[in-house]
Length: 325
Image (tube, rainbow, N blue to C red):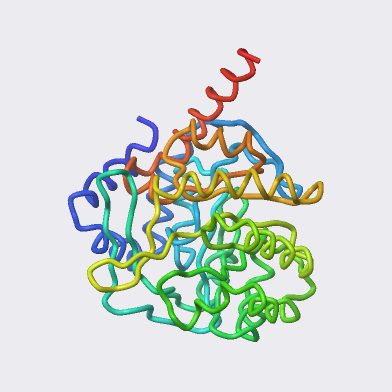
């Protein structure tokens, strides 16, 4: 059975509250997680194959930031059949996150999270990736509470990242939220040089065309290679601000990708994330102009092979579309 050990482990964790399962994963010894991943093996290529920043990917479906905060799940992502993996968000210094933390699985396939950017800082991430990394592209999402902080963490992780997602859109950390304003986020640009590896701007959900255009203008002015659209949506849950992920975001994600592809220059990279629960939705984003997609809530609901299964479903959907054209 493909991913048998991973699937059994997920079924055991599925019996626990999501936040408890998340804490277990992020406290397990990295060597144990690596051993489980390698024993499980990687499922066969799912396709459709794509190229991203000069790398040929077996699949356009990657694991979004938030699943792996500190790099200990990189080999697990490989065993899940992911085409690429995003670590983070990584902050310039250790940060506990918010209290109380919330992670809830919703009946519709979505999630609510209020973790508040917990991060060990860049050192453990860099050390783990230098000790051994899977043969898939590894991106790092970065965040900070000051413009200078973005530069600090970027310089720390630049040598180990295939590309970097600049997260300006955490919905449940007040100190971080003002970076959602493009005029404020512009201050980050001067601290992110020489822009090797490539940088992508990760933006919040929006249906405001003017604001979306401002994000595109910001990314281009900063010399970024593309945009990741989008992060979770801010909501109130049990009296706290939290982030909503999953199916409720998909239409916003699709609109953003379609609109950005119409406006963006040739070669500008777009990654769609938010509500990608199956291959039909992944295929819709790819057809709308996304170079790749990322998943997270679907892993919590469908299990560890979700990236691989969604890629297989997307390939069938795209072939079906070609046949009916």
